[in-house]
Length: 501
Image (cartoon, rainbow, N blue to C red; front, side, top):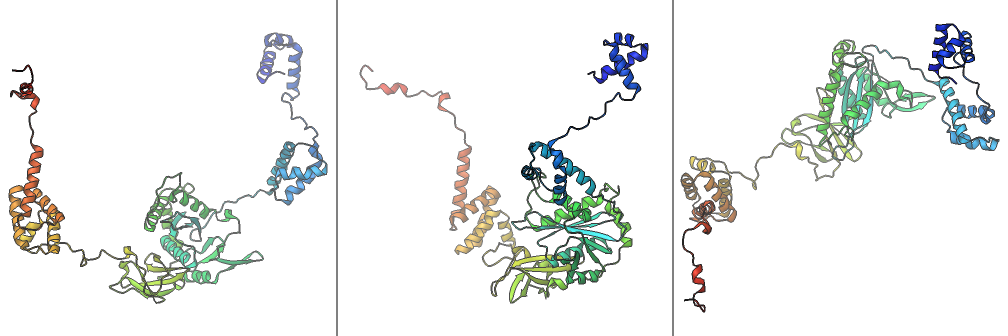
């Protein structure tokens, strides 16, 4: 069997000489071989066709395999097929069965393959939203709400603590206000917040979401169950958001210390993806949003708040609200504002309606009367109490004394607590000593006096003198005895011993 290169050399030699014998001498083969390949080229069979497959033991069982593949929608396993063929008299190997099942499955998929037609959305018509599992924040699970305006590809990602209907409504309102208007349709999954059940394949809508959509002029549509391809835009937005926001071993993101950090990360992510060119449109979504906003209908001035619970007005001097005879704290920036409160399981959720939409501002564990739920971050820095007061100078003498340093302030607080006598005289004495020994030395002495509780007359001067002396001794350099010229006393060591005069 000649290789392709050898065959081409034989034919080239024949074309050059026109003789089978001469070509055979040049190619180093028999003239019969040259004649064979020349005749094959003339008949167009130089490249041999595929040989007919040999009959196999599995051939008689192929109709049964095709039946099982069709009934299982292409999901039956080859090992299961092999076990079922053995009682029918099949004597072949499992390897042959696997190859036959794979050929039948490939043929079945070719006839049942789904063909996707490109979706060309119109401006102002569709937006999609979906959820992704967010990161843990201080041990609390979160959800990522991902909204996607179809024509301009503008994305909004918001973190949520749950997927209850009020939280979803608040997120949709924020997304619509980020879009700058409301499209005609909203496409999402068949969550219970949107679809209550299916009757004969028809989705039955949740009455509350219908009222919410009526408030905005928005019609809700849901995809086919178990068919993520029908809303691939939001599915892809969720995938990208999770890859960039959820800490994993792949992206090496640090854990979020608070929910506010996650919100800021989502804001930065949206700013990045909306200002860079999209791979399909080759334009930035933020740029295209300005054009699509002309096709969006206006949003109502006030959000839909019927699902947020009951209203409470925050007092003007205490950021605490009452709900079910219990008290809960809210951020102090909301003093005098109106908030919405609702129960959610064992929690109480507090929402504030801002210009950019409803925002959850606090979430507490339900408590009992007389045991208020207070979050320290909800209150501004507190003024000094009776147990933590800092000295403030009211006279020139007090200012000069406190200017010595932190040790002076500590001495003043401790001396006052100990009821020391003639404190003003001792303070003036410390200022005079600072003029002689320096502020740092006197401040050091005052700090040690306060720590030791020595507030008597002359105690400060004694501590200061001791400190200066110790520092002086530590800085003195003394000459070693090895370099001294003085006569030693080693010669007197043997005085009085025998033989020593």
